[in-house]
Amino acid sequence: MADPTGADPAAAEPALLARLREHFGRDPAALPVVEQEFAAYERANVQLALAELLDESDRTADLVGVIALEEYRSTSLARMARAASARAYDAGPVEYADVPLPGDRQLACVKNGLYLVRDGGHPLAVLLTESRHPFQPNFGTEVMAADRDRAEAFSRRLGKLVRHGKAFRGHILSLQADCHGGLSVLFHRLPPVARDDLILPEALLRRVERHTLTFNRHAEVLKAAGRHLKRGLLLHGPPGTGKTLTAMYLVSQMPGRTVLLLTGAGAGLIETAGKLARMLAPATVILEDVDLIGTERNQQSIGANALLFELLNQMDGLAEDTDVVFVLTTNRPDVLEPALAARPGRIDQAIEVPPPDADCRRRLLERFGRGLRLELADWAGLVARTAGVSGAFLKELLRKAAVFAAEDGGELVVRDRHVEEALGELLVAGGPLTQSLLGARAGAAAGG
Image: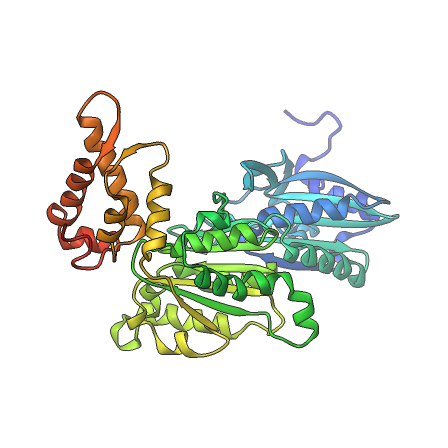
């Protein structure tokens, strides 16, 4: 239907261009625009940083949703501000991405939105924009102002707040890559681990604490004295001896530090983890089974070598006053790359976590026996017979003994015969592989 006023609808000024012209009181096509790009996983930090800036006094903002009318076209302030290209965009509903935060919280983050800001009487326009191409994800901000200095000042303050990493700082993170190469950050809760939960020789535990917890307590004094704060700790030993639990204990005892967990496929994201660790320092990077990427170069594939070199670069590239701790674990120190294991500044301390001695085995059996009714004739004999096994082996031993006791029916009481059956299943029926997986040396727990 024709417009009764006779106006040509096609000649009407595009809505977003009209809003910009009204907001600035002049032709926006002549105004400067300052851009920044951020990794897609930084979306929550960008949203929180922008909210913090907009909450400052004498600053108000109206939010307008931006719709790109052409598929895969990214939004752009410069194109919106020109009559020739502004028709590719229209005002519409504000779209949000629901982004996870620590503690099972969510944050609604603007996807493509235009903030029309009044900054103490000075107009600004801030555009949040994301790529619409599924194979090239990126996320960015654009700031338009009456002069370039004002746009740069706002953009730089925003970037500084984003780099503070409010959404990540002080939390436990891991990285995940999708099939298109996009990265996301996952948040974790680790169970608290007290000192008494670690069944290790006292001297060994003190060495671990001295290289980590003591440094953490006295970081400012050491920094003022010119001592380097970056450090690396390698925990090595058979499977099941407590290396991972030790790392979890260190996390529990250093609250306030950002923790980055690199396990499994996440080990391939070392470069990003190093970048985040520098940004979020004080930070702790935990890389389990480092032997999978850190073995002798002549035993590796090209891809594994690339990961090794990247790990070394990240450890070497830290400034000495950057408070980042690398905690690495391995079951195979014999094949670990010498450049990683021997050079100060990469690994400063290598600590063996051995199978538990007699005192530790007794304590472990008491720990894992909690909740069970144990009627064993010779505790000392059981401790002696299990020389050379790991804590994981002892835990599984009592679990299997409880299963055999339950099969007897009646009241659940674990007796010597149940322990003998469990030992037989683990050491005989299970074979060498079961022993290896549970960290038992060949010949352990043999004999009567």
